[in-house]
Length: 124
Image (cartoon, rainbow, N blue to C red; front, side, top):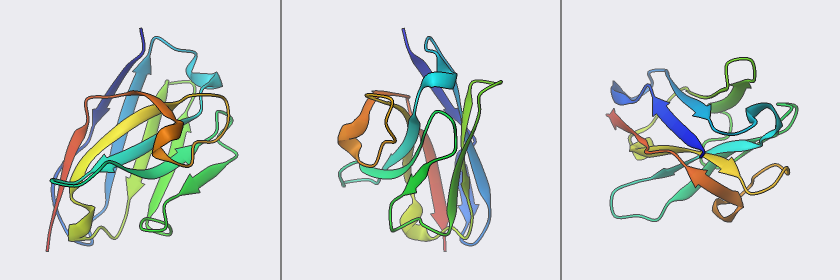
C-alpha cells in the first residue's frame, strides 16, 4: 500500500522560503515519477510540479515557475518542494502524489496516489 506523508507546512510571511517534504513508502520510489499539487479553499486542486524518477526531468505550472523547485532523494525515499518568494495566493493545502505511469506528470490527471496534505498559509 502506497503511503505518502507530507511535512514542513505552516504559517509564513510572503517572500520567505519554505521546503515541503514527502516521505514515501509502499512503492519503488526510485522508479516512480512524482509530483506536487495544491488546493486552495473553495478552489479545485491544481497541478504544481512534477519530477521524473531519475530527477533529470521536471515540469512546473506557470504560476510557480521560477519560484518553486521540485527535487527528490531516492536514497531517502523523499520528495521535496522548495518554495521561494512565496505569495499570499500560494496559500493552499499541498499534496504529494505518485504518477500513474513512468512518464513525467504534467497535470492533475497524471497523478494516482495522494498524501494527506500539508497546509501552507502565506501572510502578506
